[in-house]
Image 1 (spheres, rainbow, N blue to C red):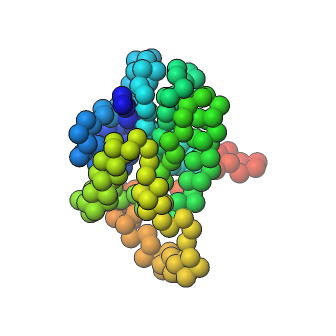
Image 2 (cartoon, helix red, strand yellow):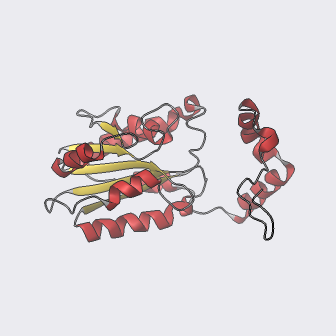
Length: 222
């Protein structure tokens, strides 16, 4: 099966891209690993031509509050209908949120898109808690191993095995107790420790509450 993986992250195929991290782990143990092509900075016409020739196209991308990156949306909008009945699409979405219900709207869009364009829909994988991958990739070794196993299973079966889809999607929603604990941690400031470290490192901590695009009626933009 002629497969191509498209990385829809604006960060491209870089160490700071969680989508590239997961895609690289996914192909790591395959017998015939497909190429991972970044949409960022690429010649869209060249990629479109390669996509039209592929049997299977897999997108790895981040979720930005119920939405995909603009560059991937632009690419999908200009995609031609499936060139043959067997041509298939699959999606792997990662996000910083713990609960994968945040990706639900986007996953429904992908299913409708495949139906309208005539692609066989392989399904979508949602993975939360991925915000730290680009910062501390060494702490996500177990996740990388699971994605490597997922990739091997996909190569053998030609679809997304349901067991892996369910595994990566947990938790779909936060339990009442966990939501309460997170709320308390955020109120005490503990939940922001990691972000504060990054802000201070980039000399932006004192600007974290700035609202440069706020428009106040009767006043100039501040």
